[in-house]
Amino acid sequence: MSELAIRRVVVACDSACELGPTIETATRLAAYWGAGLHGVFLEDPDLRRMAGLPFVRQIALPSGAVAGFGPSEVEAHFRSISRRAQRLLAEAASRLNLAWSFSVEPEDLAGPAVHDPGPDLLVLPARARPFAGHYRLPSRWVRLPYRTAHSVLLLRGGKAAGDRVVLLLDPTTKGARRSIIAAAEMAAFNRWPLVILAKEPADAEEIRRAASMVSRAVALQSRVEPVADTPAIDEQTLAGFGAGLLVVEASVAEAQAPDPENLVARIPIDILLVR
Image (cartoon, rainbow, N blue to C red; front, top):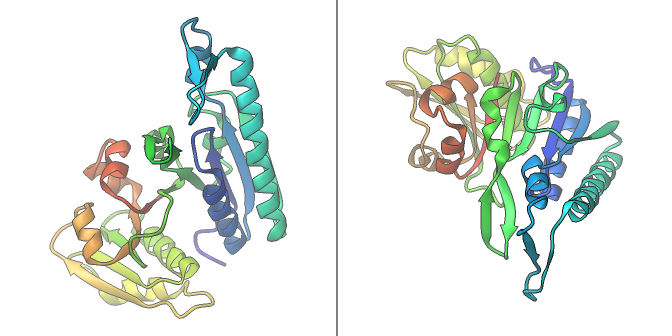
């Protein structure tokens, strides 16, 4: 059994996220770890408040038709999207014979479904789905990662820029070993090589042993790249190592990028924040 001991994967979504890829990834991860799966749909309180304003209208694309946008339209919208999310979750779980559950939260990001002691991994969409074909609004879920006690996988969507898992490691932190195990698990899950950027001084052989413990069904290729200081979380560093997924301890990420929205904005790949 993995040292991560993932017992439950929670996938969060709302009316702005790309439901299919987010739910599919969370379901596959739950199956990989033999974990429980829970989906939570968050109703947007800002949208509900906006619907009560007398001057708000909705414009249909591409026709440009203008219609009213009141409380009844918002509630119908929430019901439609949440039912679709539940259906997609049920279908994905059924394909992999997973037990699943689903809830609708009329709260903001502090709802119990994403903060209770149960989940071990939160899967969150880091980008909203395209608007008018190409424009993307920021995802409000990116405000959550530093406010929860659980590990968080932030999904950017689309094709990965690279095909390696890159772990930015500070071996002196309390969560260093768990970060190594998490990175190795994700490398095995994706069937990608693992690159560990480790702050010196670091016991490279001990790091390699920890990573190889969780190679699972695939031969995990891993290497350690010693660096003079805690590696900078930036696009140039990650691109140089062919990163498709960044793994970093949450406290290390927060020290470099106190605003999680800024972190997501400057890193164009999926990010796993480990706790």
